[in-house]
Image (cartoon, rainbow over all chains, first blue to last red; front, side, top):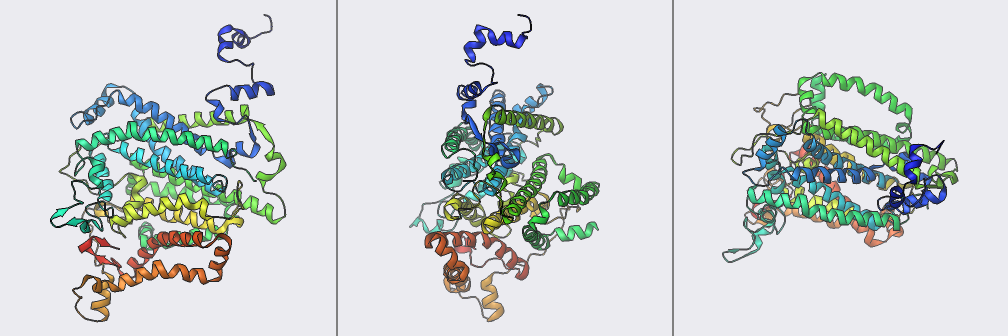
Length: 260
Length: 358
């Protein structure tokens, strides 16, 4: 045992070997095995062009967006333990979170992380545009990315309502009033007045897109529940599927872009 | 000095200034994209910003917790815009000298192991990002205002900051345009970029010279329209969505004269000096004609020019017309802004009877 450190001892145990079935990543064979054999790392190719690992080229913004998404999922799940999406409890639960958890920063990380994710996803798009990485064969993946960007904004927007304070309901009121003006589908939009048969109004404030969004004519308790479900379950599920497609297609389209 | 900046910040002056600076920046991107330029601007702007921050009205709006992300956005976008111009200038100089762009050099095309090259970079960035978020979370508490009260609206009631560009557009367009049609055009336009831009060059490396039009168009929409409007909507719009300079106190009693006039009123009353016709279509016929010309006549006119013919030849009729329609959608915003400032024009087509104001 002389000359062997504790790390080497741990690496030699049956438990370690059962988890990591390759030796230390010091030679080519093991470096390939560590990436290919690990469920998380196998998102990466085993080898990639040197230009694709340079921070000056990629800015790492796509990777950071994904990391922040994961961080938001973790902090979001923790916050869900303390939060009830009803007009009666929502605000008080957040007060309680503030007062009963000394030094708690989960809500802060969740809120600032959400803002940071919007910034990183915009910068990611900027970088991808500037390196021409949307060009063939990556056209489809650019489209997936644009939809992911929109979903990021919608995630942030639906989360905005949940604290149920003045900032929340009036920001959502301003935002959702835009939906009222959707042509043909909102009661305050152009064309809505045309959808009328005799006295029967087809598009009214009781059935237009804003009503579908808010489950009501104003931002009230049904809207809170609806935004809660959209924020915590519905949109994250779609985002998860699209992220899988996005990553899969990066690999299938030849990895991080490089000169042809 | 502060009064000059307040005066300059008003969109009527700051928007053209910003747009001109933007085009100057792209024209001289090789000068902007140097380390020397970055250091000099830092040396000029850093003291200036420190001096700005000494002003109580300025610091109040800057340090409002929900505005911190926009400060970070401005700083990061400035940096990355410079970085991308730096990279473009570097490669374009090489291409001009007959060399390969940096990314295409054999040593950069060489394949390296993901472990440790890529994995360690990612780990470092994740740790840096985590520390950044934790520090931010400790310094700035997540704001919580008074409980929701549907009977009392705060003034100004603002959307989340990333939608403030759209809310700022409400100054110039009705909600059906600013909140629905223009965002849809932006999204469809973004998704269609790869199918419209048939230029095979600049795939996988930074270059400006080889794709001038694509980059200019994208960066104009992104920086001059989207980011600029967000900054105005966040920092310079106070109660009643009235303009307030960066050093101005948000006085609720500030009154702005509003005498915006519709095109039809200009046409019938000011030019022909007759009462407005009662028929809606006849009343709005000047605006309808202008809109039809804008949407249906301008594309073929551009297509007939030398510039248009070149694009049609390269990428085909369908791509060309989709491209022109998207650009016309984008330029409708600056056009409407300029018409508002020059002629106090409210609507080109004003049909409040049908909720159709343009």
